[in-house]
Length: 295
Image (cartoon, rainbow, N blue to C red):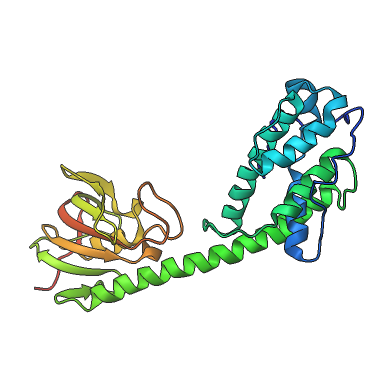
């Protein structure tokens, strides 16, 4: 988990931490989300003492102003004059960005607000001031790893389910189009643009091909201007399945489901769980051909 402060973990407490005032939020840990929010706030105090002493150079007598500034900065207020107060505003604003980023991660790239702002800030201020802390840094780390990762995983599963469904629907729609066939023993579909007269490539052949790759919305993500040479075994499974069933000289349009492409990985311009379309011309099989297809 990325922390706000790049310095090492806290080693020496600031000499005096005074009260932060009655305006600061109080922890109210009634639910798991409340506790998780508080835990994230506690986590983000790592390195704070050294930051205050070595980078911000805030006098300990101004710690009240500092923590008030954190609170106002967290809530995007800007009306302070003292150095400690302004430093607190900066950290509070940074905390706000970290909260948004953490919500984004937990919600699996959605903008949904999951964490409690009140308890997030209370966790940070309690841990930073060493007053009223309801869990240790180790307990906070443990809760973030367990409950935080569980929530993120569940939301990611929901998001990817929709993406996988969209991929399945794309392939299913292509299967219904005129002239579309299924590669034997594969989920890859193809439409013959030109059927070659050559032999099929050997299982471990090196081939020369020309191709254009497109996403489901038609966006071109890759294109070869001249024939490119590669081993069949070195490309995605869907490409392999098509090439091993194409006579040399053929040009096919192939439709590859996401699980035979890059699955959940981001691959350059290709988003996770994307079905792919290729216009593929098999120019030459460099290695000996396996067999001559039935005419």
